[in-house]
Every structure is written in structure tokens, then in C-alpha cells.
Length: 118
Length: 110
Image 1: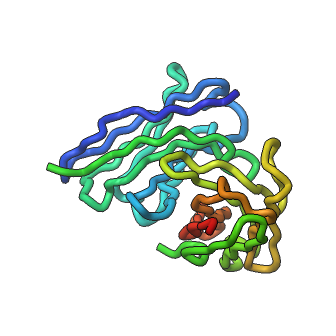
Image 2: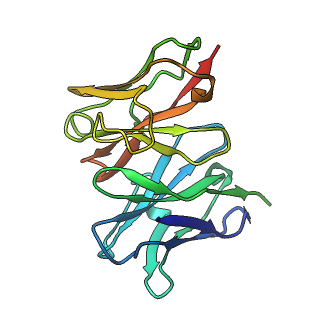
Image 3: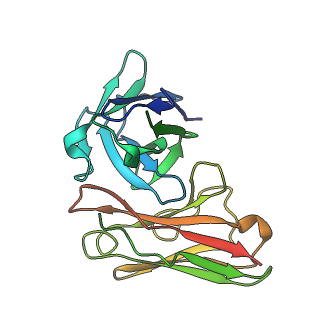
């Protein structure tokens, strides 16, 4: 059974960098034809795809966030991460990591609430 | 940012059949398959329908999906109180080269 678990600070100050990690168990972030993804959900609002890292290491970002976001993997720890710079209150959201495989998100983490506030 | 278009709310009484629509364009629904996710309060979304009309194991056959052109629909028959949740459609978008979500539909069981 594949499991994903987000971790990181729940509070980030405005203009600083948000850093999150997703730990994967039951599968390898470097194997298969998977897109290891980040999705966020502002409080009371809908889902927004943020970024993905393919098993090969190739990445892609939502154009609306591209200038501030980076995702990368650590195969030794079987993790992938998200960094978002220059955050504002608008970046306050629950951040989910998920696996995209064969045209669907089949496994999701439980999500982590990140609040941007001084 | 553009999203797939869903009605913000839907409702029905127990036992009824309800449908939720999802409208897109040629770069997403028109070209790629549609998934539906159910999000219960305080929980992560869960895959409900994939490849337009396929149910993962464990999803009751009361849930069904369909797609036509650049639109898709989720139907729930025999509505139950436990179906009260937010429902999201999603599809790969070739222009975005990423996944596009609908705005979500809040289903209320009256």
C-alpha cells in the first residue's frame, strides 16, 4: 500500500520561503512512470495543482506560481519536496502531496496546513 | 487561472439521483480523460471515478461518470447522507502540461 506524508512548518512569515517534504512509503519516487505532485487548497476554496516531479526527475510548475516554486526529489530518503519563495497571505492553504499515475491522482497525503502570517 | 467549470452546489434527498456537471475545453476534457474526487470535511480528496467512467475498487456502483465532448458528468443514485461532501472534477490540460481541477461542488443531502 502506497502512503504519502507531508511534513514541514505550519507557520511561515510573509516574504519568507515555504518548505515542505513528502515522504513516500510503499513505492519509489525514482521508479515507474509517476508524477509526484503538489496540490494546494486555500481555506474554504478549491484545489489547485502546484507542481510535479516525474520519476525521471523532470519537473513542471503551474504557470501562475512558476517564478516562486521549485520541486525536487531525494531518492536516498524516498522523499520529494516543495519550496515556495516570497510567500504572502494568499499562499495560506492546505498543501497535499499526491501521486499521478495513468492519468489520475490515486494516492494522496493527508495534507498539511501552512499559514502565512507574521 | 482558468478552471474546469462546476456548479458550486447541488442537493438532493435520500434515495434521489443527482448529477454534477463539469465543463472544460479542447485542451483538457476534449482531449483527456476526466477524474472525479470526493472530499469529505477535513479530509484529503479521494479518487471516485477515473478515465471518465471507471470506479476504483471499493467505490459503490451508485457513483457513475460520463463524458461527451468537452463536458463530463458525475451521477450519484440512491443518495445517502454519507455522500454529503465536496466533489471535484479534474483532467490533464495539454496547454498547462499539468492537471486542471474544477472549482468544486458542495453536495448537500437534505
